[in-house]
Image (tube, rainbow, N blue to C red; front, side, top):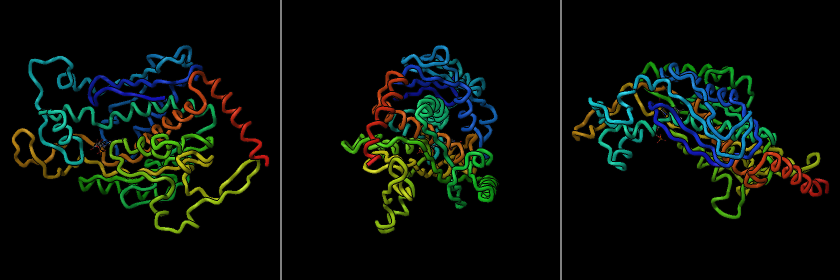
Length: 381
Ligand SMILES: Cc1cc2nc3c(=O)[nH]c(=O)nc-3n(C[C@H](O)[C@H](O)[C@H](O)COP(=O)(O)O)c2cc1C
């Protein structure tokens, strides 16, 4: 299962194609919209989220509520587009829009303008914008529908904003009730205050999210080739989220400073199978899922657009000029967690299809049942 997206931040909307979706999968548009809504919430978001009320229209690959095996196509309208018709017109307009030339540090502006030869940085901004993450969440909704069929559930939690942190508890009710998606109410309050203080100072904050997939079948991914290792594929997927700069499985950066005797998870018999008294591997050994929860943490840098702009250069004149200031969020960590859920879901759904087939949901559930039968004698020893 793979996906592609197209569309600009202030264009008409976002197009999403999810290819390789097995036939017979029930698609609940309301569940996809609920995730889109979760991406828009969170203390620290800017005015854009008050304009957009994202919802995905399914335009292909689904009939009578079920996938047909054809690519699933989705469309998310940008409500804000009405305010940008002239600037974003796909055909030339008589009065050309003003070019954006004051480069914003921390954004793709300079690198993108150099790479594609743009003289109006608007041509970079529009596609590099994290508006594209709405499309990822919609695609992720399709992946998550498949994962739910085999009992996999994904949830993220904010564990750090600025220098305020908390341990992940993965208590869904508490997380969804928190404005910053942190299940510890006391830490959630501190994080909210930190965002308010940064906003008052015209500044921005980053942080760390943890994302967990539970109910994961052992044996997804492979150690046989570098590009089949699932930890590597997950890392690529989550670090591709705009502003994501670091990834670790479980608490890998702490574990790197400890002795092996503490870090590795002992193997024990548990019921009709195997268990681990701890999960510091984050559910992956040798690039293969080991049956424990997959736990990934992702570090996000502070938002690049500052209300007190950094020194920069005007691309047209070459003169020093403060960076462009556009309407912007102060902190996007709660939203980033929802995007990370989608990306983890897409990689796991793809790995599931690789192992168990991608033609029909029935083929997959039968193959999973057969696989579980195959594992039984080992577990029964
Ligand atoms: C959900 C989400 C929303 C974002 N919103 C903004 C924003 O409002 N302003 C901003 O400057 N950056 C925002 N970003 C981050 C930028 O898109 C990102 O820093 C930029 O595209 C450069 O990419 P890089 O940081 O990965 O190098 C957001 C990121 C995410 C995940």
